[in-house]
Image 1 (cartoon, helix red, strand yellow):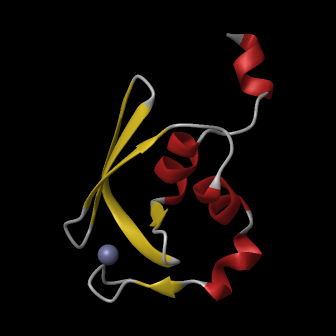
Image 2 (cartoon, protein in one colour; image 1 turned 180 degrees about the horizontal axis):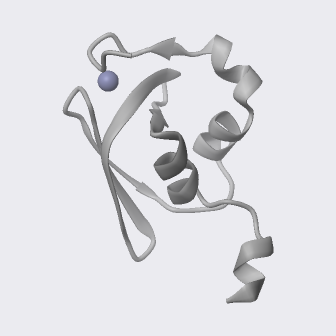
Length: 82
Ligand SMILES: [Zn+2]
């Protein structure tokens, strides 16, 4: 258990804490609901999209959510009401 704290954040943790999800086409959505089932994360965005992704400690989502300075390159979803 103690070891887990030293590890990098998982996608689930980052999504839950930031409240953001970034889609493949670099659009940022607000997260309305997020749930983790084993290795899978279920996300429902404010605009009503349901997204299922695998939880991991690397990958596209992690890169975007960790590096906050990259956010200027993202578009905000118009339906999510930022
Ligand atoms: Zn949206």
